[in-house]
Length: 281
Image 1 (cartoon, rainbow, N blue to C red):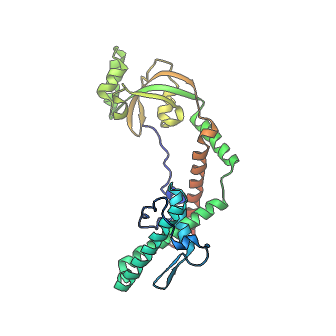
Image 2 (cartoon, helix red, strand yellow):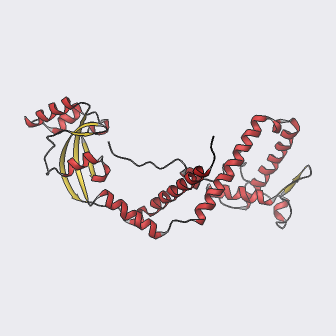
């Protein structure tokens, strides 16, 4: 029954890392075990060489950063495990190349998709870094939402039905002394409030459809609508239980959420602008 604004699915691309690592790292070496010789030497040259093929240290650094972002501690044990994993990967890769697996069309298509994903995510991350949302923009959005939601909150109940005749019949029962809560439990189509006798809890007027909120805010405390209120959901009978000054969360509490919402909106616009310039057939 509430109006909800959904963010576009592109949000995931903004904050995720490139999902190209396929296998988890092996368990780190137990404390006290000797480190691999390569880790005891200065960090120069390749991490290791497998059948003449060098594994660059930069690859290990990328994997260590990824594991650290997942909560693992950057330690000698983790780095030793990463080295062993990369050696195993290189051994398996060389065997896959010898077997001809790497030339399969389906695998090549999958590799191209992974490559595309990494580049797209990197581009979006770079764009966000170069176009940050300012504190002033966040504060402006906060004030806009507060104004949209209104400065009062309402505790209301409603009964939702599918036809005009049902709504008129329920209003007639209320006029004869029927209890709103009992009629809501019996007749409402809103399963989310049915067991609570139609109780919608405390909400600002901006939470609801315009026709619903207009009817609700005109009611006196304890009164119900005696004329039909129609929204896209059906016909409503509304009762206002109480009202109070709105209790908006402080800006500091919602700042990060608002910042991410504004970032998503900007990225959606960038993508829309690029699509508008592209020739799509």
